[in-house]
Length: 393
Image (cartoon, rainbow, N blue to C red; front, side):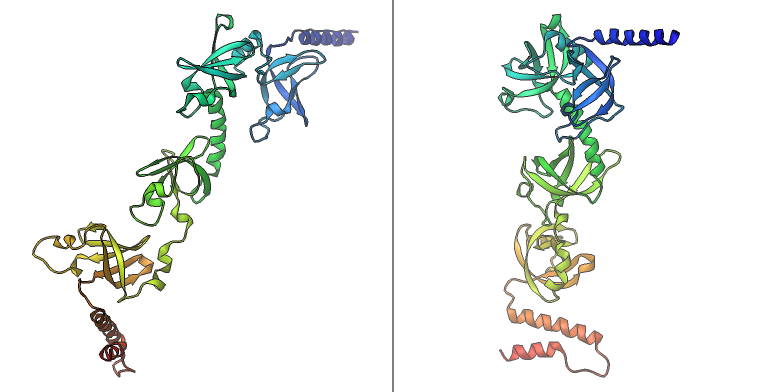
């Protein structure tokens, strides 16, 4: 006989617990089932409470919870079963529900009514709350009016004087979402990965790129294009999407180095078929070094004119006055080493004729052939042919 009495006592206790749940009450329970439209939550009542599945999904429509997870919510209905909500609807929230949401640290929905001193006036149900400027968004808002009229989800940070003084924060909600997004982004960020982000700002040294979840990487100006001294604004504009390659991730600081030029072809791969010894080309002087001048022949291809190739002078580094940085000059290719990414050039003196350049080229070819020709002689040299051609002009 004791067993039926025990069963009755258990049922009575369960029904008493069920009757104690009221609308607006904050509760915590365990998710025991998830269906297409609703999820079942065990909150200790006679039967499971329900919550709409749509409230358990993120902005991309993915479920944020699983069976067995703990859930904090507010009772929004008790007739015909207990219905829960993870956030309070802005039209239905009462003062009591708002207070319960504050105590349970649950989000609430509100509408930004206008700009006031120091922040915004936000309407939540029949109550008015205050949101400081710094708490309306993660990033600084240049024009405060852009938020007026918008419906957002807020976290109640202060609830005083029976609801006459309510302070809310949207930033607290966004930071939690951003942190979750950041963990997902970090899993995809590995050296060599190609990702798409949004340019957050452009500086003289490069651009900061927002990769998602508040994570930013630096696209240095030297990694934007192959040409030295590129202007960052030519490659990136704030607010625009950009595809970049992850170059390095500093494990200690978390800094991320990005590259843009690496997504294109390295110009040095075509050097062997583009430049030859004796060829005369034009180039722009990009910088001076102690040992010579660097000449940009094309974006990404710099050649070195050694100091010894300039006319001798009694003054130290007098050759720098002959080739000011930024000037375009004619140079003759002396050496080509694609595998080492090196090209040696010599400046072409002003007034040099095409004939003299051809004779110099013939001399260089003849010297190379003599160094490699067998002792018994051969079929003649390319130098002879070049000289013969010159004589006949």
